[in-house]
Image 1 (cartoon, rainbow, N blue to C red):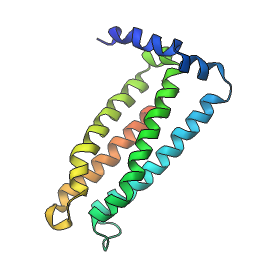
Image 2: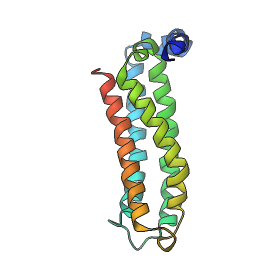
Image 3: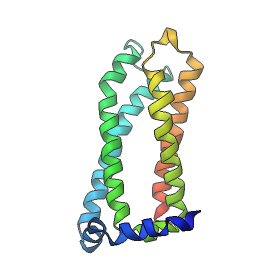
Image 4: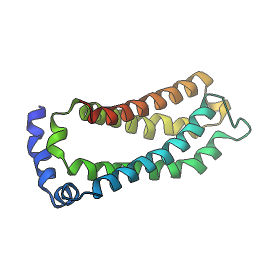
Length: 160
């Protein structure tokens, strides 16, 4: 099945964006810096929300109010990470084709995005009385764990 994706990876490597980034000395590090800064912004918002779900902070603040304040940062962080990640991918699509770290990262990314924008999203909109502490804590730990897998997969790309 993965072999069928080879033309997709090859096309991105030879695309205008891919060749522009790979031919530049400074463009890839610049895009990677944007990627990491967006990750820090996203993770900051999720850290506060997840700690609140675990009952470890900001207990006087209603979770739906925190979510309304912090989710724009999380969402923009995700969007910027996806765009900058795509730009980095396009600069070397063929090297990612056979990289197990990349495959792991993409699988974890798909899982966390589905989880975060379905189950997790519905849980952070509920007041404490409407949500069980075990369910909220489990969702927070799963969210942390999945994003950790995305990050670990990203780091593994350079070493696998």
